[in-house]
Image 1 (cartoon, helix red, strand yellow):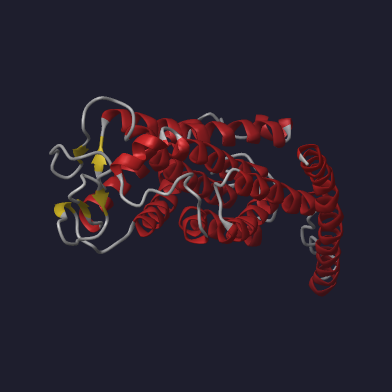
Image 2 (tube, rainbow, N blue to C red; image 1 turned 60 degrees about the horizontal axis):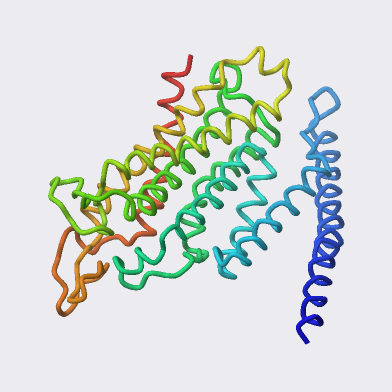
Length: 342
């Protein structure tokens, strides 16, 4: 019986890539055919003297379908996503892959490292927070709040710039640079906050302090920060910046890179966005998000019988705080990057 189950599992593992390819290839070719027809009719309506509309290659269509499917299956297998999160994640991954592999790598790094961080010392987090969800399965709401802003910017990138990788250069490629920095900053903000909350709450010996009053508060309190948490927030942003930086180096033509501005500030922008995003998230959490401690000593997000108020008001929840932080960081950091870029 055991050997039969093993054989069934091996057969399913072999058949799965075949089924994915069998579905992905015709779908990608359908998208490509539609793109060809649209480009043909668009160029005819604009006249022969105009530059024809950019056509997305069938390989990019194929990658935009296969890569998100692979990571969604991985997320479901590792219980990092539920069904609703997987469905919405497919859409987010499809749009980001279609625009630029540099955008996609930001999503991949955030998803993988964020999932690992959530599961890090989960037995300690269970003792700090009431209703702690084992494995940190992300629903469609969490995917929307963390990936919604980057997806919006990616859609604007697709409509305004097209698809393909471009170096960050505000002098030569202002629109693509602005949108790419916005996507990078949004993911760096989310990843920095995730690293700070998931690592900072279980590492270090001292209790965190509330960012608005500097008073010591129990671990897991919204708006509570620690020096080690702030360090991890910067490291989380740097990881996104490094991924974007190396992807740009390997996907953009060498001659184009030589004529463009230096790309190394991408790493610094990622680190600053991770740190500032975590600080902004903490300020919003300390003021607009309720934190209390119940009779069992666990942190709760809603007032109730036997719950002692620690900080904040019940105006926003954790998802709303994450979404608001990513929007603010994504819209402000392109301008800052434009000012400081060499």
